[in-house]
Image 1 (cartoon, rainbow, N blue to C red):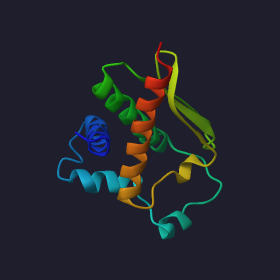
Image 2: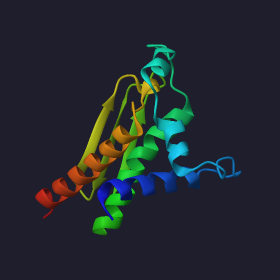
Image 3: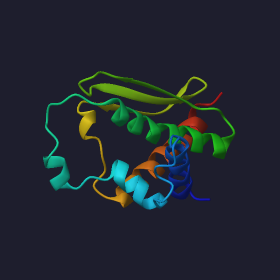
Image 4: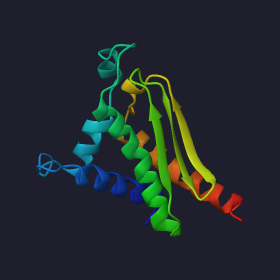
Length: 142
């Protein structure tokens, strides 16, 4: 399975695992991911520049990086973890690491506006994170 497909499959699995009441059972995987992560420029204009971030948005951001960590584990068999710190104003950082190696990281300054312009951009970003994680692990493992 290629990295892009594995990332998306893992992300959808993470999202569906949080659906305790079956709210999203009738939505396709693509529609579910688009609803959570894809925003057009027009939709972004409706979101204020300065605003507090809600807990659901923080969880949605965390799911992206948990999917990277879990997909990395599936490929390598090495356990990866996610650490995320986010202020109520949307400033923060997320780090994915395995053993003592940082696989990927991202800083946020306006996390309440976190999104991707297209579904394809989300796919590409997930694939990029996963491939870089593998490269970094191979480069720095003892």
